[in-house]
Image (cartoon, rainbow, N blue to C red; front, side, top):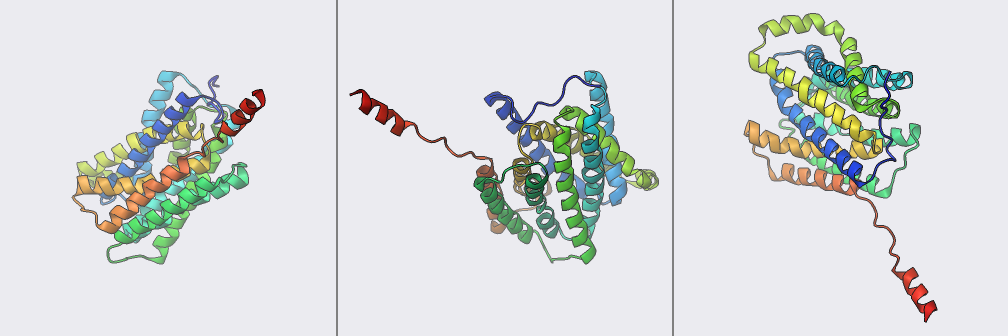
Length: 317
């Protein structure tokens, strides 16, 4: 059992807010890099095997860190959220997304999966009692328009199958459900505990793909296997932990909106690492994604105290 539960979202001063924002930034950058690595690893590994290999790699790192830090098992109250998020987000989401991206073009997948943050905000309002401030709604609308623009610009020949569309929608729903389930668990367990055991639950859920993983690992080129390990260590172990740290200190809706920065970063990374020169529509869509995130993360200015001060000064005269 642990004696270091996660810090509630309402606690902490400006330094905690800055740390949470930095953690969210690390998550977004690493999740964007995952799209580049998946393209390499996905050529040699089937969707289920890739998900299992990624989760096993991440779990090894997370368990090692957990043992070094001696955090132990999370409290009993955290387990329902850990179990649900592990099955939905670490398990079903990764398999469905890997499979869906083999059936539809990248643009279509991006547009469909980016329904996730909208579902997170709605589910957070319904099940967590979170508010939907106008700035969050406006920012999500702007970012979603940007994601659609990026998706359209990357759609190529527009290849899409009904199965692929369904799988991407399933991935978006699993992602949203996993985030909303994880939020209450973070009130009882630390970010490292919730991430570690969520990853382990996801790995157990993907064990039926163990045979495929062994067969494909024997034939896969080293570059594909290294990309799979990278996916486990950085976009999974590190990025999911920094995500949980930030989620414990803000709302699920606001965190979901932050992930709209991912398409913009994917555009830049594809340009740098894959030599894919973005078009004007892609650049415009990426700029909209970032602008929407800025709006959703902004806070209204506090009301000015000038009128009250002027009244007091007038009375004193």
